[in-house]
Length: 291
Ligand code: ADP
Image (cartoon, rainbow, N blue to C red; front, side):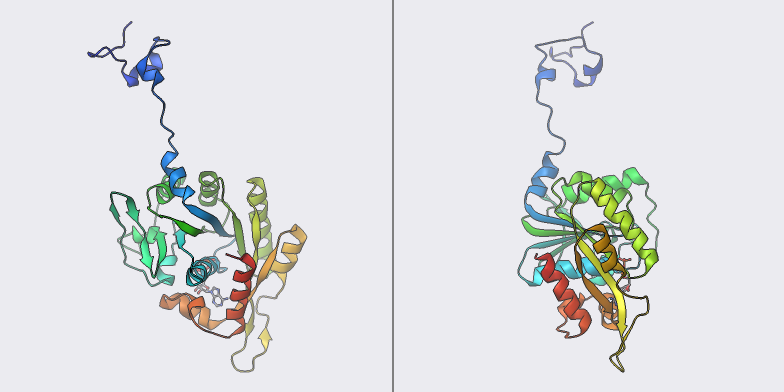
């Protein structure tokens, strides 16, 4: 039975039932690579790093924001992609609340902050208090769009802030970016957090994603009055864990009210010229990562 249209050509929609063997122009037409655009965008980004944590509230976004900002301040072209779709905190931490994304014929235009290109679901929500109710397939589609439709341009580094855990979001990033350079895993010192970090390290191993290192955040508190370090949540858990799992330990950042204040005020902590132990700890970690 013929499936030709009026012009004598096969209808592509009939391919699945067509018995037209060789010589069919539709069948011969090269099927376009569905990932061509994604590959083209990613090929312009030299290094891609994901920041992960086993738990929320351990300082993952703080590390991602400061990592991106310090690389930018060092003169690199940097992008920051916030895929914490349900709880995006990057816009608040960088003072970009209320900003909206726009597009031109080259794609979606990231929000630029002094040269740092930022993308977050926070820029898509008209009501910041409304919950994002998305199932897995929608989240996968949104992350793909962020990588494929955003005109990131030429970048030296893309820092991806993933939500806590080992769910759809980090998995999607690993699948869409085969040449991801690695993961920075952020934890707090206590034992219960370490259990979750082990899962993050195992997740990376399962996906052949290098672990660039573990950051132990909120590691002790430097008393502003007496200068003594108070181990509010114990100390050293992240380091022990990194050693036991054979992954690099990047350093420990103490609790510092200036970090909380900078996050709330919309300025990255590394932008300050602080000489506190926390500021030095950040600098040492960033130096070890060598971006
Ligand atoms: P996560 O991304 O893991 O959920 P955030 O980076 O959003 O965590 O940090 C949670 C809160 O803790 C934020 O208010 C942040 O400013 C604060 N914070 C993170 N690290 C520190 C630190 N070392 N000292 C003080 N406050 C911190």
